[in-house]
Image 1 (cartoon, helix red, strand yellow):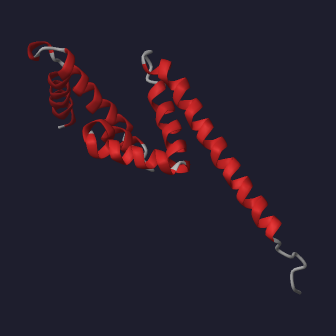
Image 2 (image 1 turned 135 degrees about the horizontal axis):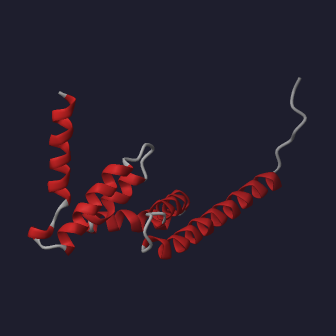
Amino acid sequence: MPSLRVYRASDEFARELAARVARWLLIGLGLVLMLAALPLVALPGHLGLPLMVVGLMIVLRNSFSAKRRFLRMQRAHPNMVFPIRRLMRREPEIVQVFWQQYLRVERLVLPRRARFAVRARRHLKRRFQRKAV
């Protein structure tokens, strides 16, 4: 039995208008999430970074100009954007990204003799390897 539904030009216009409105609403939601994440980034607990990544994902999936700017920024500053790209993957490597960022911050802030993260990791690794054998 053939479909009784007739597609009209007005239906296509309504679908296109609804898609545009939905895209603008999603971009707005992403921007609100990123703005809400800004004060949370400075607080302990790392709640701001995942919220920032989710907002950025929503904006990048719905805005062509934001994608172009993000790619331009990636080419200009690959080391700054790479952790964000790793967090935006389907199965993000959250622990590894946080560890690498912590090591970068430690390298920037602390003098060489006061850095303890790498030494502590090596010590713990050796300690647990001996117990496992």
